[in-house]
Length: 123
Image 1 (cartoon, rainbow, N blue to C red):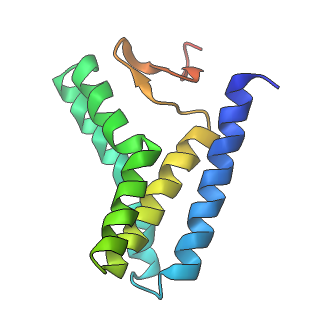
Image 2 (spheres, rainbow, N blue to C red):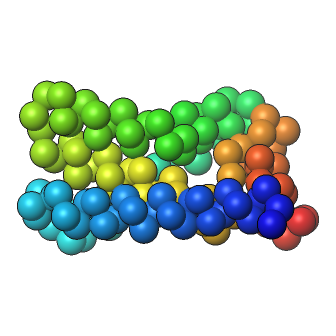
Image 3 (tube, rainbow, N blue to C red):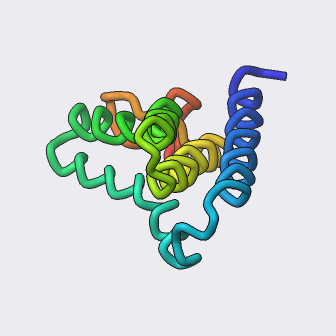
């Protein structure tokens, strides 16, 4: 298998694992609709592209790396905040979801250019 397929499979594994972990540990910290909204919250980072491709890529990547969700989970565990743990699982799941669909980390050359290849109509 090629490297891109491996990364998509890894994304699928992170997505499923994070949602299962959320389900097992959240103790219903959030209403279902709030969990769905939080799951898609990282996509608000698209707004960074209003400042140009380089800043947009930096903003997008800062919240779409797996480490961001893991850091939120760790902070929640360290400080005894179950809500932060739940939010971290959802954030991590979103990053895996994006990778699974082929939306990789952005390159500074433009939104369509990712570490998994070009996305959109101009592929």
